[in-house]
Amino acid sequence: MRYELMLPNQIRTAIEERWPVVLPLGVLEYHGEHMAVGMDTLAVVRMLELVEAEMNIVILPPFYYGAASYAVAGPEGSGTVQVGGNVLAPFGEALFHGLLRIGFRNIHAIIHHQTENFAAGMPTDLAFKAAGRQAIFRMLEEKSGEGWWGDDAMASYYSEHGEGRNPFNWIQVHPLMSPEILAEYPFDHAGQGETSLMLALCPEAVDMARLAENKGWYTATAKDASAELGARGRDLILARLLTLLKQD
Ligand SMILES: [Zn+2]
Image (cartoon, rainbow, N blue to C red; front, top):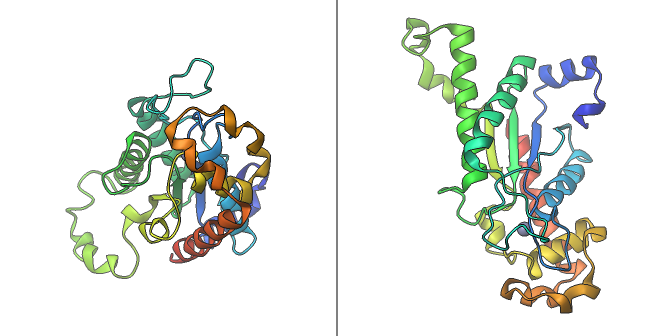
């Protein structure tokens, strides 16, 4: 369900049944002359709509204002919006803390932007990962007091992790495409992979007639894009998201 459409009784059901609460996390960034600036975030939103058809999840309003960076193009006339990770972190902490206060304990953010080396991280995902950790510590200290971890009642802390009670799983940040998917599907910026994915998920965000106006090297492969290839990527991502979000 879309969070903004939920009634309080539905929210309470989602809390009790531990529905995954998912934040589409992304940026607004220049993706060549042939594709919309919201591509990275739109891909997450559209994929989550497909997940929602298969299982109970809460889709939060997407957050588009991540750290796009000016690596691809400067902002003038390109449409790229850059908000630095140092600004995002306190926002993310406040958002996650607010979601924990509501009662959610199965929160996920999913991002597609700059995720090819996700373990090392990039500004947007690092900011939201740190934000999640900070929000969890804050919540634990508010609920259980300072010294919560050192208390005798916590002696079984690590064995309870095996039973799925690790509080640091309350908030997780994931890339849209896992390394397994990247091995099977082209990862690029505004090239064949992303253009195909948009043709399959959100064709209104692509205008193939404008391909010839592109100047960037990274768009050279976009001419080989197809909705069929995008559909293969979509199916790989859908299977992986269903497994990921059903885990808990
Ligand atoms: Zn992209």
